[in-house]
Length: 436
Image: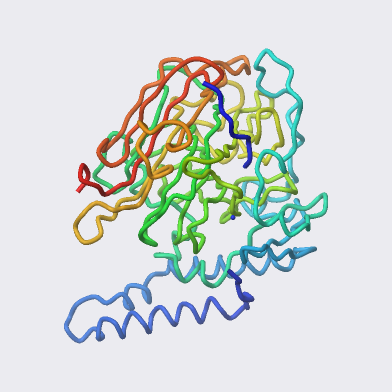
């Protein structure tokens, strides 16, 4: 089966002033107290919880300081047509290097050898591999800088918790075969060995998310450790998250954790960790164009792999294209050691959050919002699934298993052969007659 698509990779924030975070904290406290009518009834109010939460106050101060540093370091500001603001920040001043283990460092040199497929492929650029809305303005960040999507007042106000701003909920660490935490999956996965990377192409859709508290994403997971305690994950793909971004646009994202989503890690550049090296990709910015039902299909190709020399995990766009950056080996325990510290599991597929509004299943879509049986041009897909072996070779993802938590809501169906190699279609509409 051949794809007729091509690899591709969509508000106006106000200024962030130094006093905003303090104002925001007071606003949250006062509004919470008003909503609950005070503490006179003996119950614990949201305001009381916020007031005595040192963690919340500390996180507000950290966010305020980080936002100020990013804006002060910016050498150029770009207004995206979709309302995003992009700050061009010198690469050595990016948020990653505020991590205690990375302070004083500069971006690492690109790895000398990338995973080998057996065929020589031309190296492409980020523009072809991941078209993004902000670049349609015709402006670019200078060499030596990285584009950082500016965090706005609205982004902070939408967050359910300042202490966990930019982080997945801790419940995300529950095993993928458990559906009790509201996170539902339709995934293909491989286990039973050591994996040093993963690669796939996935088409991008404007999935409809019905509630700000929910999201829908499609991604690659590289996983090691135990799901309940010390899970290490590296993740990348596209995501629709109204709470995180303020709209329903599919956006390019990254994620990491080294403690099962408890205290470490974050999306994109919301915390110190991922080191970006590319000046033409804005992590967290909208992808455009996207696939249309019965129309053109636009997919992105992602490769995550471990540099055997330095031990860093690199992210690449396109079949053999631009490097976005890397997750330093020092961030991790199981995934962190040089040499043979590989992953125990690799997953490909979709995830949607179901908050059960009004007591029924959410209508939030996964993928295109259509079931796998509708096939090419209608359903979402992953194709050419591969893993990286111990010798830095890309090989087919043998022994791929398929899992759908709730097939009546979101399903998955796979195949093998032709130009697509190992592939599957996945997704669904959420609430329907088979998913009440």
